[in-house]
Length: 267
Ligand code: 13P
Image (cartoon, rainbow, N blue to C red; front, top):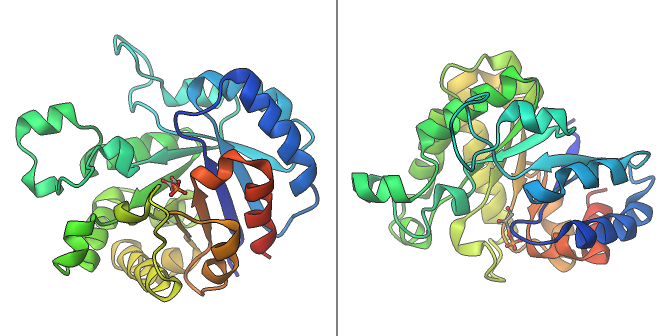
């Protein structure tokens, strides 16, 4: 039985003061809700302060990304040891907003676009290896654009993203530390949710891809979240599906009551 995992991705929202106010409101609402792992992923600037505020709560801490090198002349980047140092346990990788795909299929990217846009499948893989080497947990996002969906490429795209993300990673590490998030790009921040049956089906495709890459044991153990306009009113339906082990929540994680309602819907 996989333990549910509910994560709030705050994206580029919340000053330190606002972040602390949100945690203060959230902590009592989710206290004692031990059926799921609950975590928040504030912007880098609020990580340290939020970590201090989470002491004594059942809320964990995630970061929204990281650079793969441990240190060096990489202006603007944040390393995984830096994140570990402030108490981060999870790192989101390959989010569609950091892949920068925004509707541009990866095969169509010219070298210029690739430089402008962010993470690639192989970049996600290198970062996942670095996150695991630091004994942290990567949350690896995968998902198709609307164009890819309309052209019937959903399963191919998701399988390719999963397969590439897991290259050269030991099955035992995948089983114990890796989380996937199926986030259809067209459902993010749009209010349009993927129908629960379809979300469950594609999460099943993710699991099958894990089985092909790392074996059935890892596939059975790995947790797969759904992300994309998950809200209090649709969370229970999504979270009841056999292949959906949690949620990666954007907009609704910015309000304590909404995020707490989603945690409550997880069981
Ligand atoms: P929304 O919940 O705002 O659609 O965002 C989902 C997401 O991108 C989480 O990472």
